Image (cartoon, rainbow, N blue to C red; front, top):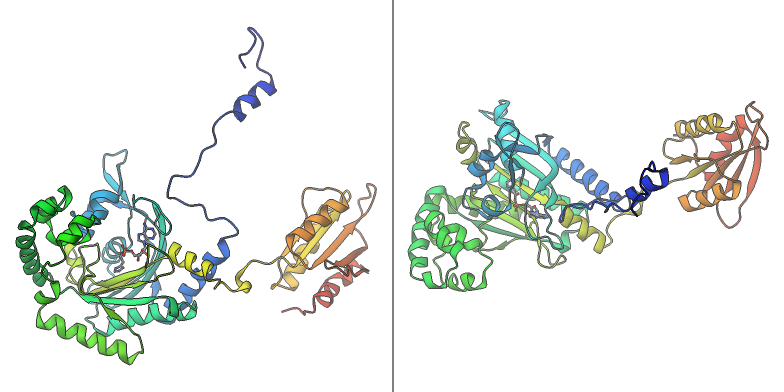
Length: 452
Ligand code: HAM
């Protein structure tokens, strides 16, 4: 409503104006993780950290933002991620920076920059948000999270088997073993792939009229990346394309055969998938993916492989390497839909302390802390914000607590209360009044616990 001329805006006018402003929303494909979802995330994070640490992997943290060049040189200039999906921008100095679309490049950069790679063996893990400008759908987001591990300085195939085994143990711990399948492929050495690329280019040149613009461009710059095309016409043209397997050298074949023997010995079943090439350029020899049918179209929950050329490609000394990353949102979806999150991982409130009356806030806060200190296994909420007894009791019930500790008095006395009431928050509503000094013990009695 326009303001009357010469009248100073009243508080009402100002708050009306504020109220009519549009609410800001999260960016499409970037999700808030709300308190109700957090237990699943925390359960996963705890489980992952426990498993990787039990295998001797140590955590590394590196920035979310890196120079754009890092991702171009590692993932490959002619890949979907670099060509279409990166969040890149020039900062105030005019430097081109990119929100990390994956963790391997940053992990290698950080480990090499700090001298962790040369002539050493390292087992590292990380977790955190990654960013890809993809079309959002169930299981595919623009900000998503990965758990990743990277092992450096080991030739394999024993380390390849170890990282696959680590993923298998994680599935076992999460009770997901029956819902995931391991696919592996041998994509050979860089040299093998160069020969294959030449053969593929020759083949695709003869199918040029069936290709789209993207595929025609890639045909020249990086023919293997034509295999990533989601266009059904291009996929049809590829149906009788030469197979990478026919170009893989004897050395590389022997390595992957040995890996298969190690997997069998560890009781890990797998499916060979000659079409599995991964969408990132840095891999060689064994690549793998764990997929699930419980998620619909976005079925890959974990992907990885060897990448022996990457460290040198980024300016370091040649360093053997292998690793994988897991999509956390996809695991969260699986765990929730299969109801695999144990109740014990949900945050619980056990005791709600009611503070009814004036000048009791300090005593309420102190008593609550005493209960927490005495019984560290308990969740205790101390009521804040005042209010009548009935309103506070309602909040106590809503919190899910099993027990209320009630500090209550009328009037404005300033002396501490000498007694408190303790009441079970079930249908029976059993209650008793005890001296403050006995209240801690009484809480334990009511809940059937002793101090830990
Ligand atoms: P990636 O296959 O691109 O590999 O990603 C790994 C996993 O991240 C996927 O299997 C999937 O679960 C999840 N993911 C990927 N994109 C999205 C998305 N838009 N929304 C939700 N989840 C997604 C890598 O990133 C390599 N750095 C893995 C690696 C580590 N290789 C060696 N070491």
